[in-house]
Amino acid sequence: MMGKANSGKQQLLFFGLLLVLLILSIKTNVMGNLWGLGTGQGYLIPEESSLFRFKVNQMNTGSGEYWLYAEDENNYYSMMSQSGKKPYLLISKESAVNCAHFNKLDVKTWCK
Image (cartoon, rainbow, N blue to C red):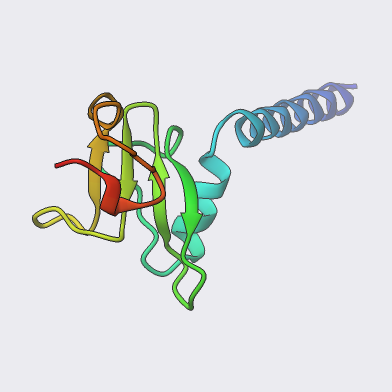
């Protein structure tokens, strides 16, 4: 009798975890970011962002599996240019509003 109760709890737990993973994959970018970190060469999440908030806008089409342009709710990021010791450049969305002809997929239009 106890075995059936445990089996039911295990099934409920399994489907609960499956539901959480499904919601995470639909509502956030966490699954894509985990995949990129696990399989991509050069893929990184900027320290200013997070696994849950970081969204890739354009991937490299060459042999490397890294992003060229990305964003989160606060910043735009580009690996097409560097900033100090970081392998990427960022501009806040607040600052981007003041850039004439700003294009989030063209780092040359980003104001400094």
